[in-house]
Structure formats: C-alpha cells, structure tokens
Image (tube, rainbow, N blue to C red):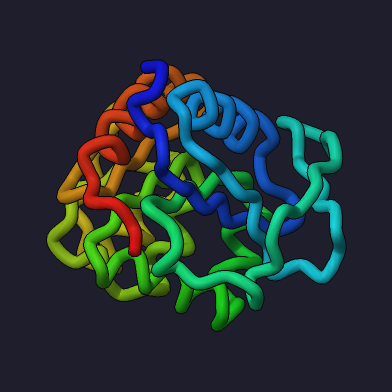
Length: 185
C-alpha cells in the first residue's frame, strides 16, 4: 500500500475517550500509504486521552484545533470510535458541521465501531448501507440507513466497520477508497 495516498491529507476527528487502536492502527496505515494525517479535535487541550478497551489509554498530541481547520483542505476523514468520543462529537455543532461538509462534498469518510453516531447527526445516512458496533444498529436504522452485520462496508465513499477486530479489513478498504478520491483544493 506504499505511496497509494502520496500527497493526500487526511483529517482524523476525535474527542476525549476515542478507542486507542481505532486511531493508532488506521492512522499508521494512512501514513504507511503516504498520507499526511492530522489529529483534529474540538477539545481545548493540546493533548487528548484515549480509551484502551476497559480503561484510560495513552495521551496523543492534537495536531490541529477544529476551529483552525477547514474540511476543504482535506482529502478524507477518519472517525475512530469509542463510546465517549462520538457521543461528545455528535453534540458539538462545529464537529457535526465539519463531518457534514465531507458528507455533502462526497469526500470519503471512514468510521469504525461507535463513530457512526456522529454521522447520524449529519442527516446524510438515509438509504446508505453501513455497519457499526451492533448496539448502534437501531440508531442507524432510525436514521434511514441500511444497517448490515459485515466486517467492512463501502457505500459511495463511506467506509464503515464494526469493531477493533475488523481493523485490517477496514484499513484496506479505507486506503482503497481514499486513494480513488479526487484531491482536495
């Protein structure tokens, strides 16, 4: 996958409590494929803490504050899961607007585990085939999505997966989808 994403900039939107390996493994895959990946957060701190399965995980440097970036400057968006992270993002107007800009423009978005909670707030899931952690299926169906229990799903540039065990398939489909997208301005 080396150099498949050379010259592409990918936004990774997170809040406190994101699932650690749902950020670290996809981010490493993006970088290994040649992408420039930025951890972006509405959080006011310069570092943000991960959740690691059942307890707090490591701290990660925030590359850019959400208020300082524009979706137009990125080629794709990665949304890691974790329960706290998307629950905080979906009630943050700026975060939802940022995600919505990707959805409206047709730029690729990759969301794993609980991350589709944030996607629901955009109102752009009606008729879209998605997967997620199984506890979100009713929420996604109520948002008009066609929820399926599959390792990875891609629908018109939207890549979704269920859980950390799906990360290898998620990363492969994410790289493939991001590589085929038109470059940002």
